[in-house]
Image (cartoon, rainbow, N blue to C red; front, side):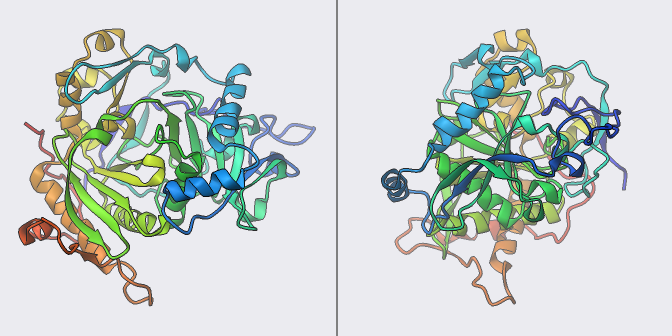
Length: 450
């Protein structure tokens, strides 16, 4: 099989991200950058926010519980955004994202355009493989253990006594590999951070049930619909092969959050699964669930299915963790195959989760000034799978969900139609019309939407 590569310019997420610089230990100990590796981490301390695990899905009841219990520090306003602003005042960001021009593009969908010339880097292009969603972690390449400790805002862990706790100066438990929240030094929006699960385990960019549940807990803990988390797989514009989610705060709805949906089915755990309608990128929407874990499990199993079948994808976590959007995509593959028009390539926009959700981060002033709904739709349409391919992939996902956990004594997801649903049996069974594929390799059919 031919290896697909594209010449790309990696996004800088840390001030210590360098392609070819090797660190050397200094006489006084450590590498001099105060990183998170063995050379510097011994005896290091960072703030620790310990969250309470939720027995129910994120809801108004949970919010009331948090209000009544009075967490020691408001998670979003005082901790995350407060620490982020502190790093901004300390000059750790590569540019001032609050000075970037932003506008809502006129039209039915309300796409958001931002002019962010700071993300256009004059840096040596590197080859990035786009035909393998799963790739082994490579410690020789940049990873998040190489960031400076000043770029880390706090540790984010489960509370041991089932109550929200905050420790301003907690030792780093090297043996148990903490999850941390760090700044992205090339921010897209206000409060742009990275959630890095179990950072010292050096996990590749690959969703599992534990990591997605952690991301949902972060969304629920923030408790604000304008704070979203996103995930990009390899092949779908993840730039670093070290497990991480992105998150930021933007006080307006994303276009995809307003798009209509058509319900496909509901799981026995109460998770409603729908298909996006009237949106340029085809995708699935998962919402509800009896518990946060019900929602996390079904979406993580869907992601694992895509990973195992080598299908690049993006995930948006919205509504304080109550709703997730899953987008299989094929833009990078089409780019590598020469199937993207020069006009779109010239914009240098890599359509990852934020762009797909409707927040168009533009790097050239002319693209920003000429931004219109037609151009935004045209770019995103190239990202989407064709209708036929989307139905094949959806069928693959649903088959995987129906068989998840079989043989280990746990209940399957058991996708069922709700009684009283107006869906026809044809709608419920639509996902089974296309042939199922055990593996997906080679050149896929990824047609431009008309």
